[in-house]
Length: 107
Image 1 (cartoon, rainbow, N blue to C red):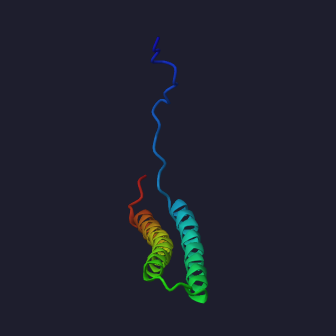
Image 2: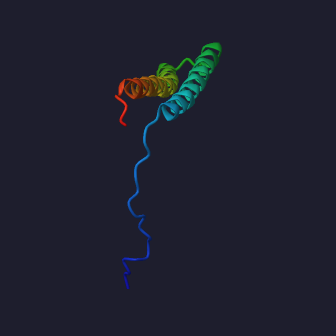
């Protein structure tokens, strides 16, 4: 009833090698996403600041303020993570380039 050969298994998959071009492309994508999320965060924060809370209930004001802070904080966290990833990929690309240039040539 259970046949172990139903799912074909790939043979000897080699992991993709890191190259400076791949690192630069990944840093560009991550940096673009980070910038887009940063722009979104600014737009959200500006929108929240332009629309004050209209309530006399102190609990409503506190909950609304907490939710607004949470929304802006989550988007800022995403932008920061994308930015850190972009910087790390750029550094990896530079490191790979330096290793390629300083590695002695094999004949």
